Amino acid sequence: MNGMTVILDARSLPPADRAEAVRETIANTIVRVEIDFPAAAGPAAAYGAISQLGQLTVCSVRSNAVAVERTPALARDELAPSIFLGLQLSGSSLVVQGSREAVLKPQELVIYDSTVPYTLADAEGIRQHFFRIPITALGLPHDTIRQLCGITLCPGHPIADLAGAYLHRLASRPDIYDHPDAGSVSHPSIELIRALLTTHLDATALGTEPLQATLQLRVLEYARARLGDPGLSAAQIAAEHHVSVRHLYNVLATGGISLGDWIRERRLEGCREDLASPGLRSLTIAAVARRWGFTDPSNFGRVFRTAYGLSPREWRSLAHQ
Image (tube, rainbow, N blue to C red):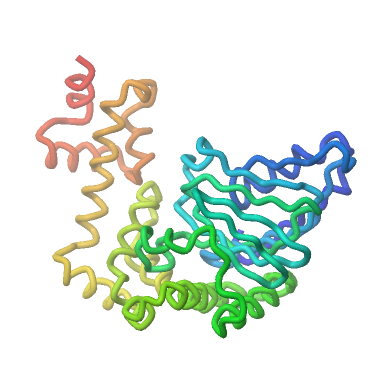
């Protein structure tokens, strides 16, 4: 959905279908949550735009839903660990995560973590811009980010004011997402959000440390999340992280890592675990290999035997004895 926009407009649907349609649209484009539409408010109403800019997801929505909840079960889903940055448009709302509660007034910001249950409540209906960013794209430790979840981000702080004004304008202009260069907005937007977070942590080292210092971690997490993609390559990874292939190899070399070997070893580990899994016995060996990015069954068999001393079939038989 890079460079594309999904328009959410419940008015185009029969009233009885609107609530479920809104839930499914949000689940398929942003995050799976429970959404409470009060019966007293009449048919579910929601209007907004959801856009993808590189690793940044932008959602601007107004709805008569009074609560959005990411339950403990939903917080364990397969969504890549992410933060949500909420920008209140009008009125006031309440964001609860863990033991923290943040009351948001217009133009105020809050973040919350996709891996921990949260609730967003607004008796007058949800009126926010939302921005989703994978944790790995920020280049900050997850535990560090959690320190800021569920608190209002310093109203009046210069960085917060700058970020709020910029993000409000970004979310209010869905027409820019059709521009050929729209994807180039993702990186500086995430950098601004990173600056916002590090400023509020008062972490001078984190704020001034070049993003390159976390490049190795971010590269490996990016590759780990895409091991099933047979087209995963150094060129793709370098382009995603705005570095040259040569620089990518140099950064990994400082940690003694060969990218090709690292990817192959993790793929083989995934195949080995799947072949031993009772729940995946119905899958053919070739299907398991494809799940982890191996497209040539013969080559997969050779590298598996070299790594483990057994063929994939022998390993599966041994594991299920």
